[in-house]
Image 1: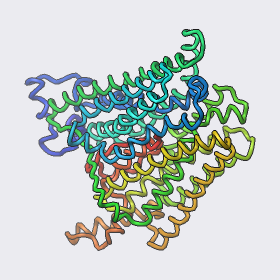
Image 2: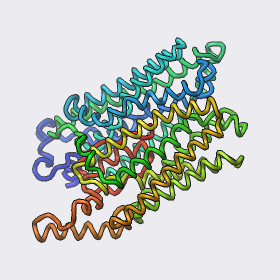
Image 3: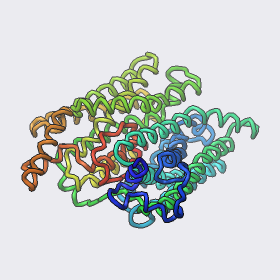
Image 4: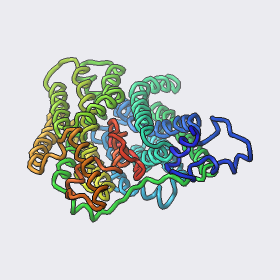
Length: 525
């Protein structure tokens, strides 16, 4: 019975198709596979989960290589800050478009297994080109490398979540996505704290600091991308084997993109988009420029500066499950969004106008960053109908990448000409715009019935009533489409996870995940 339930969990099916008999044909009569080799057994799926978690490790590790080596990149390549921030902008540009089509490529063109390997190769090749540009002191080649790296990085996150939904179902997904999130944060944190040491060791080997030592360090960082490529190959083999033994199908993202849906987006959704863009453009560019800021203003050593700059990522891993659980149980999403934005504004003002210990402000920034992700991203699923979720999340990711690319360039130019104080004031202004949009969202939602700011109990009661009416009357509920959209949609879990993982958010309550496996991706990027 236990094996049968596990098999149904893996396949997401019921009835005879999920019974053990489907896999016995390959095993031979009377021969049972060892637990670690049986795709339907929990132990085997735990092994698969390990490879899933490390699938994106290289991408997360190498994404913030420039931030971890900010001083070295600026000095060794003789760059100004605007040119430095272009390295982040070039990552974002391809994802202004690719966020719409990553799922389509995995579903219709490559398939999950081949697609994962291809996107892993893009990540590896992009990092090698980036490192080669540093070795040859060719900045334009480094830009090309970051562009190629961006093509693979975001879509690889789509593939990672698709694998997870294909192998795990129901309540297991909370733990699975939580582990993937922790591994993502681990990659970012390890990068921030180890790359300076790697650079110093390479500099000792080559005889002196310089672009040769920088390129060698970045090439060593690329080993993590090769490791992730190996995980992609192993996952492809294991998934192909499970398909043969269990007669299951390749996973699909479930993504549905209809650009014509944009014209039907309600006003609250546009406010959510505005909050998203204005908030995150004050987080990620700041982290990219943070190391030199802490060295110059607080006289930190490079190691201390890297440590405090990485605290946002460190806090997000343990804080996200706690804050996500709190938001799930309490509801009141809009209030939590406003609270998180206000706390972020306070953190930036402390960094800009005081000389208090920066660990205080950065810790507050880490908590508020996690809280906003938990409260903001699920709200998209409360304001649009189910069939528009893919378009809404894709559009949100697209304009966010556009905002990150533009603000990265603007931040570099401001820092070169005006200094860190003016840059911090600029970030505070962006957060103020997000705060005003949050307050406006509260009043607009209030005038429309308060669906976004309902308590969790009220939302559950409304959904229960709607379900009861549908069962009794055997016809569509009397609730309006807008009213239904304010409920937690039954298939929204997968699309939300596509983005929450990169944000550092705890995943919402996974109601009926069988309808969608749209992968999480980094808005962090």
